Image (cartoon, rainbow, N blue to C red):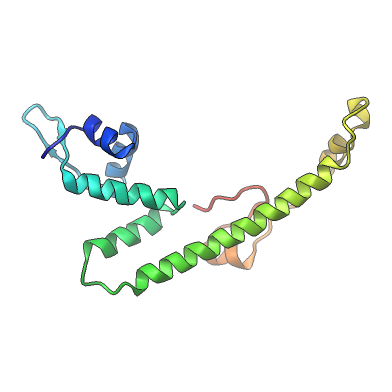
Length: 157
């Protein structure tokens, strides 16, 4: 059963541009082409794209998805790698949760500086924001992941 890109998009709930992007990135294999040069996808593309979309719904990076796809493509491979990858991803999620909780505390403290009444020139929020903010800090978790932690930025590349 072959289908065009629009049909694949409809079956998987994935936008056409995203499908093309996954092809360019090598996550989704290039489909065969019809005589009219239309992309022709099959059930394998549906399965692989569904796998990729599930990984993305778990906020996995392309690198993590690539590693899992490589394991999926080699059924004889040891599954311990998948377990370690998920364990590491879980750790990053826990770090991000802690960062978000810290951010929430900072925002609540900032909000408490203003009653919401009076002129903006006396606003405690605006006065506090005029002060130099914290500089980016490299945390052990971020250094391990190869990126610099900047408060307020919670995605890793």
